[in-house]
Length: 208
Ligand code: URA
Image 1 (cartoon, rainbow, N blue to C red):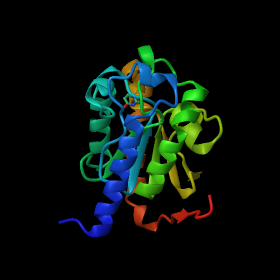
Image 2 (tube, rainbow, N blue to C red):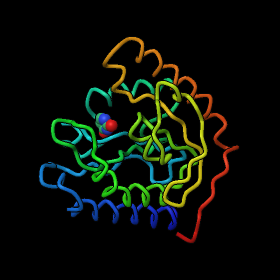
Image 3 (cartoon, protein in one colour):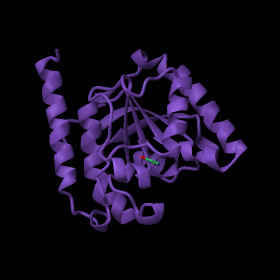
Image 4 (cartoon, rainbow, N blue to C red):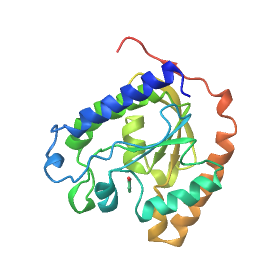
């Protein structure tokens, strides 16, 4: 049985999800099949943020269910994390860009309030940025994943302060052995980082 505060949080997240389902803030609403809002426990300590839905995610309305998702499932196990119990997974964009093209700055900006609110509701101790778009958006600067992957930073996004881990995107594993190896290394390191979660401080900025 869930406590009232857990229920309230869940309902609020559900309300936000309903809001995204009616969203027309950018052109992507015209081509989406489903909004891909996010999945996982509403109070997860670890939040993972990818780029945007692909074909299978758009069909299912859930993040990371295609080839990159299968890879992510294996990587999560490696880090000792359960997708069902430990991690909330979402993307920078809640809709699929046609032909899986890169998100545009306008689309990222249009979707930003949803990600900011999601993070403030979930209150993660650690955010894992999967790939350069997620890392760039969450850190507010351009990120070279090949140089910065595996590093732990301080993040302040949407008024929520916590730690942020930069990883290669799971899809990188589909493009070559070298990237696949670095990705495995990132998640091995993530497993070590996650063991220290209880030491991580978080803070909320109340005047936004
Ligand atoms: N790639 C992403 O960045 N997100 C998904 O949900 C699927 C693939």
